[in-house]
Image 1 (cartoon, one colour):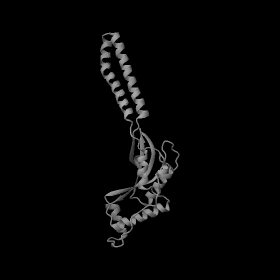
Image 2 (cartoon, helix red, strand yellow; image 1 turned 180 degrees about the vertical axis):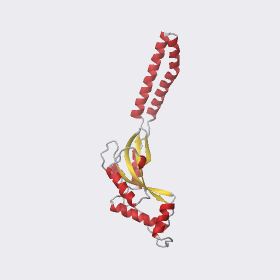
Image 3 (cartoon, helix red, strand yellow; image 1 turned 120 degrees about the vertical axis):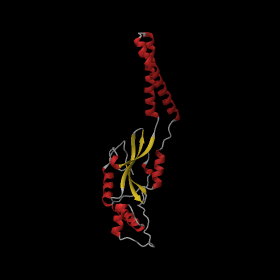
Image 4 (tube, one colour; image 1 turned 60 degrees about the horizontal axis):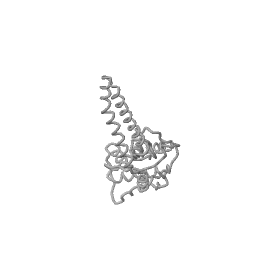
Length: 224
């Protein structure tokens, strides 16, 4: 995946509505938001401006939503229908051989039917081979890529220092925001995770993609 697709832009926030009068004092409005989640238009604008200033002070510019979406689409790989069909058939043959032949093999062993036992054991061995082949084909040719979002607190993969520092610097000044890791996972392998800042906006939220790094070649450096 080419990180050159990603483009950064200054943090954009809504302008303060000049034609609206603030009904609550600044401190009271901020406290009401922190305690109840209630926010006036002016209070929202003040927080957005404060967050914009923080990002500017830290020299952190989010990636544009358009470039993130384009990057995600470029990472998508359609699954191979032929490979999936081969995997399903091979796994099916292996399972049928094991389920059908194993009980009969036990009976033939008890009755000392060596000839039947030999062929049943051979069938089970062949079925096991099909299972091994299906697993090998699946791991090599069946690509399953999925974008996943994790709370930073529950993310188990390493996070580079620059990304953690960015999250800490912002969180100290704006405790209302939260941080997530959005990662592309391919066959249980993590690729190119993003540090995502989630900003509450009334009953909704906005996600801002701030940092990205290359997980398989983890070097603790920015990719874009």
